[in-house]
Every structure is written in C-alpha cells, then in structure tokens.
Image (cartoon, rainbow, N blue to C red):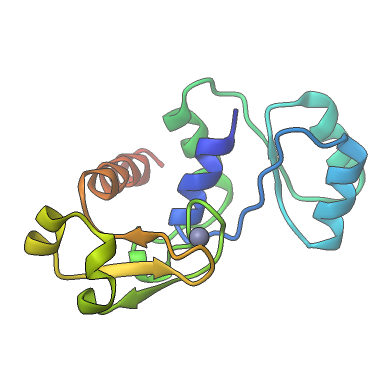
Length: 147
Ligand SMILES: [Zn+2]
C-alpha cells in the first residue's frame, strides 16, 4: 500500500491524490488530465502510464524508506517545513493559526508546551511539531543523506 507514502509526500508539500481501487485506464486518464506523476509498484500500470507519456515512478523497493529514496531520486524535495506542507488526510494546504483560536481542540499538555500550530484549510485538522513530525523530519534527513 502506498497510502502512507502519499501522506508523507503531502507533508513534504506535494499535491498527491491516492487511489486504492480504481481501474488502471481511469487512473491514467486522471493523471494525464491533472498533469500528475504516477507512483506505483504495478508493472502493468507503469507500462500503461509510460505509453501515455505520463511521468512514472515504478517502485522496486519493499520498505517504505527505500521507496522514499527511490522517489527522492526522481523528484526534487526541499527540506521538510510545515509552512509548505499539505494536510496528510485531505491534501489541502495548511496555514499557521494562533494558539488561542484552537485551544479547545488540542490536548491541554500540548497547549502548555507548544507555541506554533498549523491547521488544514479544508478539514481543520491541527498539526504541531510533536513526536510524529519529529520522526518524519528524522526520516527525511536520513533519506536526504542517502541520496
Ligand atoms: Zn485536511
């Protein structure tokens, strides 16, 4: 499943749609129409996409980290910065919000210790630099060191 990769790419600021079940021809058509890159493990889909002049990344690796390294070789990502991230859940843009406006939506412990928050414009999901983000920063740093 490449769903977790899509979430990470969104956090890196890439506009990603993710389909779990969609006929290959519909996916290729959508990618063509929306000018998207296709990232897949599927040989048949990769061949189909390449025949339609779609930039295609055919993943060979099995672990998520190795797959992200394969992707990093082909697309240019900057260092990770929440100011440029997209919502990992819905792909919309994040914007920084004042803590006072989201106080009732965050755990009290977080409110005490964190000052900067980002919120998704679409689904209102709130982000801050906590363990999850720090782990992602660490992973991205490891990948950047490996490419
Ligand atoms: Zn969202």
